[in-house]
Amino acid sequence: MDSILKPLYYAVSWVMTVVHSALGYVLGKDNHESLKWTLSIVSLVIIIRVLLIPLFVKQIKSQRAMTVLQPKMKEIQKRHKDDRQKQSEEMMKLYKEHKTNPLASCFPLLAQAPIFYALFRVLNGIANNHSFVPGVITPKLLQSAHDAKFLGAPIAESFLNAHITSTKIVTVILIVFMSATTFTTQRQLMVKGMPKMDSSNNMMVQQQKIMLYVFPIIFAVSGVNFPIGVLIYWSTTNLWTFGQQYYVIKRNPTPGSPAYEELQKKRGISDGTGPDVVSPEGMSESENQSRQRQQPKKKKRRR
Amino acid sequence: MKLFRAIVLTPIKFYQKWISPSLAPRCKYYPSCSQYAVDAISAYGVRGVLMATWRVVRCNPWSHGGVDYAVVQAPVKNPMNLKGAI
Image 1 (cartoon, rainbow over the protein chains, first blue to last red):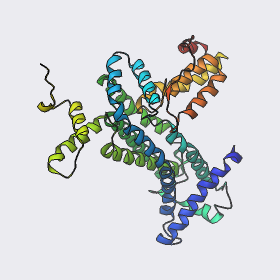
Image 2 (image 1 turned 90 degrees about the vertical axis):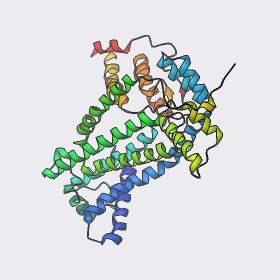
Image 3 (image 1 turned 45 degrees about the vertical axis):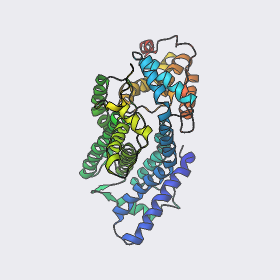
Image 4 (image 1 turned 180 degrees about the vertical axis):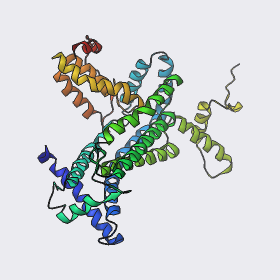
């Protein structure tokens, strides 16, 4: 197994050492070792997430394409009001027909798994003073990484093989942080970012209850096995996800989602006062969708 | 053989019950990859595992998703019955 994954160990170690030595020019060659190693893990996140951005843009584009499908989606929702399964089935058919799909698939998550695992192995190696790629992580670097700390906890140490209490404390802090970011991100996406399906409020509440304790439990069970460095990676990538999603929900929301309606409403209001000009099409849509206020001019009177 | 299916299905069922509801929907297919896996493994065993793996691979940013059942008819066996085999 290790021999198959050797290229990944190499890649992860290489990025980390390169960033570590590059930061040497800024922070001083033998100073701030802990900070340099921590940032080298953060840079791993930045690299992989930047590589994933094109996919993300692609997804936003296909979400935008949904504006055209709105009437058909509403029709489906109406037709299968009481059958959520049939509803999703018909939706999927519609997406396929129009060669567009607003859903992200598991790929962005799974793409990070190999890096994650490689980092896990490399850091475990560092904890045991063993370098998988001796040419890249030299004995001197190995020692320096071994001693590197994040908030006083060695980055290569995990909760279960902790030698000092601060490892345990920092693990708990990071687990809480990861749970909180995941919860917030998923909640924001479900509440604001998804096109409204006919899911009842009751189900939402139920889901959020599950979320509240499922994330901490899962992160706690897995997190105690992971070195602090892996938890740093995970926390950083969570933070990135949150930021990315926040940006999209504010600036580029999926048509049909509550965030989209909010943006339309905002633009509708600023239409009269600010330079933001909204196309008449966009206007009428926002008015059709807003449930709170009804514009008299849009009422169609048939006599 | 039923034991194999039950063992493989347990984590998927766990995911469906506890993890999936906490995450926003993301699967491009109907039924979702996890349900596809449950259907495929209940019906075909080891072959179902391969089918499910292939399905997850197909669920990527370059595919358009769609409706895709593991078993053409509704699965004959109720996967819940397999719990008795453990």
